[in-house]
Amino acid sequence: MMYQSTRGAPPVTLDLALVKGIADDGGLFLPQSLPALGAEDFAAAQTIQDVARIILTPFFADSVLAPDLDEIIAETFHFDIPLSPLNVAEGYCGLLELYHGPTAAFKDVGAGFLAACLARLEGNRDNPLTILVATSGDTGGAVAAAFNNREGMRVAILYPDGRVSDRQAHQLTCWGNNVLSLSVNGSFDDCQALVKNALANEVLAAKHRFSSANSINIGRLLPQSIYYAHASIMHWRATGHAPSFVIPTGNLGNAFACYLAREVGLPIGDIVLATNANRLIVDFLDGSTWAPRASIQTLASAMDVGNPSNMERLRCQGGEAIDLREQVRAVSVSDDDIRAEIGRNFTEFGLATCPHTATASYVWRNLSDDERRDKDWILVATAHPAKFEQIVEQIVGENIPIPEELAAILSRERRFVKIEPDADAFAAALEKSFGN
Picture 1 (cartoon, rainbow, N blue to C red):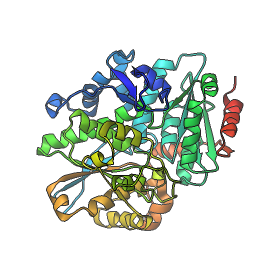
Picture 2: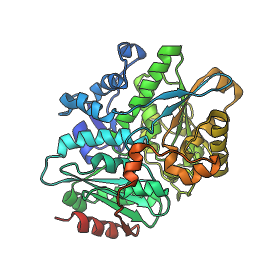
Picture 3: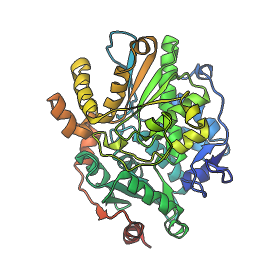
Picture 4: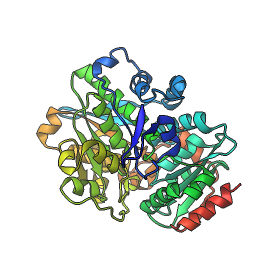
């Protein structure tokens, strides 16, 4: 299978798309065609690994990684991703818990998969591959953990100074010598712009052999589609109903992965996007021009994105707003509503939820009575609440236990460099740490 740019550059193989991260014309890679699958194709599938093998095999056709696909899947999906039903009065509502991986966030799936692929493609090179990642909180920690001390791999993490939680910041800055953590005096959008400009800088890219681990890399999206496929198949098999999903979203990668799973043919109903006060997606679907904005700092910090990159993929695959309105919905949730929702979830379900997950439950709670009753809903829980203890514990009035693997990360010593959101400052930091 070949992969094409959203902007029209000639298609490339999966292997090259994974390594390049972004197309030569600045576009994002999409499969040139999608396999046609249905629930019947998964009749013998019992585990998420089984589902992953069925879905990913056609995407890896002609890839040198095809013989290693089983190993890559095993490395990626080595922790539980449970679907836990909530005790609701009417209808069905479940919580898809994506936070049981090494860094307690959904990004562990995509980052682990990409690391497993790139280590096999590039990990034995004398000239290391440098992975660039802009993060609004969780992506950087997951990528750092996945690539930490991997031979032939280096990582540069850019995160907005003061705009992530203390525990998120610790996760971004406590790794080995092959990980450079950069605290940028700006927003996530500034970090993302630095990454995109560096990838497009032919001289700098050639020197450091850049790739990207943001959701702009197709290697992040393909594995994320698996947990939507698995959850929907298992629910459909048990009930005969295609579940609908409410997905917290910032850069739109996780939500696009669900959209991709539905496009392939999985039994998925509605897709509703939960955003925070950064409501560009909501306004676009409501008829406004797509015009990137400065991001707004919110309690759901990992969703503080003013220019969601994956809208380019969604528009390329699904059309403009008039077409997309028939395929997805989006709702903006305020900080006040996030706070109140964290409290309601704890009171009603005995469930501590991170601010991002709270946006999803708020959107579900505010659907019409008919929609909540007549459709089966799955809310996507994107991060463990212990990563946002300063917010959650104050609201619920209890300490949130820290997962064992997260506690181990928080015991590590931190190392980071502060820079201004300037291309020259970024290049200088790379040269100082990784220059050969």
